[in-house]
Length: 300
Length: 291
Image 1 (cartoon, rainbow over the protein chains, first blue to last red):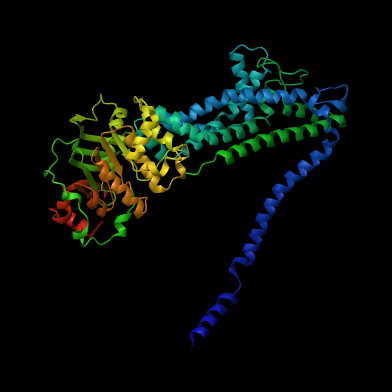
Image 2 (image 1 turned 30 degrees about the vertical axis):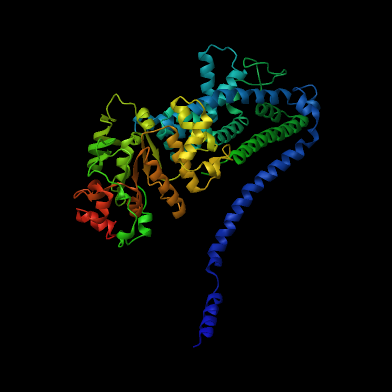
């Protein structure tokens, strides 16, 4: 046989059979995967569109700049909730971020992971991240009582609950960011006669900052949507702006929760509009996180 | 442990006669007044006996090469010399590592001080994610070295590493913009900026192409005039080209556990090791029969 004929025969053999990638089993499986994806996304899209439609009548300036009002349901607003949530976020960050980073630095850079107590901390950190948020509310109530606060529905109380809530997340993501800094950078620094402390401060931490910032913001965006621990602390309706960490406060999710349990349609609409406000705030936070990650990301 | 690299690229070392030998220098048979010495050095990682009874002395202003197959403990020995093994939690060192007669593993010795005298260059170029300038200035800054003019020190270090002409116009740019070979010379410059006495090099060329390798080797020969250099290499030709003395290590499997313990087979002038080795294992290794 000539070489041309052999080549032709082989070509035919390659193209003749049906692709085994497309038999019935794989097609069904592929369909299932698509359905799962479709289902998940669809539920979310329907929810958001439905909420937006319901709330659309209330997309006005009162929504953002007015206090809650039971006399005029049509012009009730989320001013106290938005400001309250912002106060809570900042205070939470001030408490959780330094603690979380310090804990992560200790665990990654200084602790001897073979010691039993460090191993216990290690295991429990993972568990803490999965603890229901209401438990942290209980914990915050206890802490506030310990410090002798009669009134627990203040910025400090809410921030303690939320800081406790996101601390495990901050620690875990900070550790991952620190671990992503290559061993060689530390070795290079130490080999020049730097101490471990100098190496951490001048090399490892600065290199890990983008990862730490991203993780922290994602933690905060989880905290901003939490209602359960704040309810436990007794956060309710407030008709003034928070003035400090000891000021009484409310939060967006609390306001939304309260409004949605009212029977009047106008309050329901306001609740839907409030959900959209909350979503926008969370999206903004996540956007900042993505921006930081992309801008400062380093490939080693 | 490092993977087999350049040694595999040159499987046959048959014609050793035409390899350039630095042995043209007249050196005593063993180092006089050695800068560093190891005495009965044993290293363990947990229960694993990594290195067994290594006795070596490293001569002033000489380049000493440590060669041998993967897992023979040569990098481990190197990392003992400036106490970098301290960073491995499970590592345990027995025996003595003498630096000008003083045991660096003595309790009163500060490992940080040891490392300022004994610098190290690593296998993979590891510049810091900073500017070229800051890479050089980092060492003097963290060690609190008294520097009259940092600019001068940076220039001197970069000239010392034969890198000045290539980077003098971009000192403020990131070191990550340099090629691999330039990065490695930057790491050498960074090390000499702290004015060490000894420079340890752990397979400094294994991540570089042949041209960059040649430049680093030239640099090593120049640095020999001012520093004592100890280099671990997989590349036997490199050892033959640059080193004054060569220590050949091999690994011996434990009969019961199968763990491989590294030991020193032979230590001599490089010219002797490559032309007339005493030990059969050395001869087999350098002629490419194993390893």
